[in-house]
Image 1 (cartoon, rainbow, N blue to C red):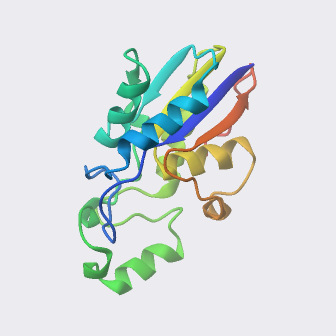
Image 2 (image 1 turned 90 degrees about the vertical axis):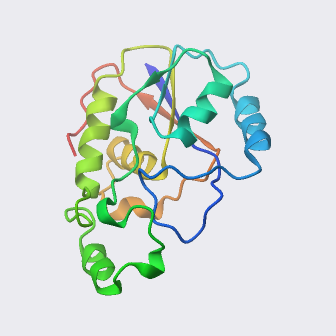
Length: 181
């Protein structure tokens, strides 16, 4: 059985901004948060490390291991035309319309949560049977994994709020019979 450890990137230095795939600066607490993550991994026999290509994920994993694989399937939700905008500057009606069915609808030129879950499920199905895999990624990806592995609907998955710089552990069965989302 493979242990999957998901870690959300550390805190960022922006508030009120719609960022999924946008690059944003890390908070001044980065060094302390790295130490916190490293302390939680002491004694863990890690077979492989993976990360989203986002700088906030790569910066963290580079402090943990020099050998890691970047995988685009681990990227945060693509908010399309809303990326980098202040939430207050995005048309409220457009946000409300999207929020009515965020699982199946997407922001303009972005992706739906179901699309994110499909690529995340593909990543999980292709993790080799190893002792332990560590993944540095984003809240949306962690929510989707939690939903897929615990048979929670994507609609209900937002009840789970992954914190920055925290570890979430899952056991992957050897049969890899996970839903396609």
